[in-house]
Length: 320
Ligand code: F6P
Image (cartoon, rainbow, N blue to C red; front, top):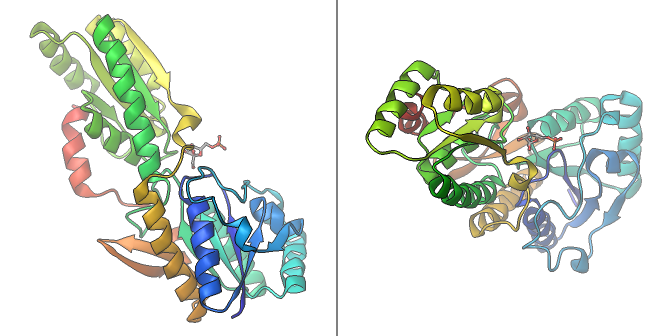
């Protein structure tokens, strides 16, 4: 395989831009011709495909979001558009694709593989950390640092005003961001889809802490629980503490990638290029217990990501 397209797809995540750079540069080092697909899956359909030049990938390692831009493409569900995409790749002589994105993007690319047998390798990149088979997805560390900084700032106001703050994190149906940031910021409460919570018991615990001098509190809630507004009212009514809700929203997606995300981008990229060049057809690169490997797309599509049981155990007291 000589010509390989690099594409970012789905929600942007810090680490995507470094991965684009690393994939292109590693492909050159292997004597291959990298191409860049702009605007995600829509760019495949609209032929926004250019051969990568060194200047396209220089000065981008610190960039958040994705320098290739991205989208969630409705059109790619339509075989007529996928056929156009195949024709575009053929026109450029492209034989394989590296897709940097989440499980939705991998499923779409796998459909494309079933249609036209164009091999691809997937690099997990989503702040949600919800891709089955991998312990880590690009963007998670950067997002956690943004959340940590926001909660540390909110704590200053909570402390100064004797207030409760409920902070809602992203993550779609996955509570990884909420759990990790609740622990890292010393939150008193954490509600996530993965752990049963008990408001009565949380109420008893908090009331007793207030009786013993607690003057403010921080609760982190995963968006997947849809409990943000309810918990804020509940704290005012049940604990008797003035409470505010902060929905962190899209600030969690952006920002310059942390050192960890940049280094992980290198490692994922090398594994993706090596996998494709060694003849793998539709594999996702995974990082598991400290090593890189590949899993078939079916592993990712057919199962849910499992959260580290140690993290669950550490968070459980915050749910009761
Ligand atoms: O998948 C990343 C993510 O940021 C989720 O955490 C969130 O639920 C969703 O995307 C938001 O999507 P959009 O940016 O399309 O509103």
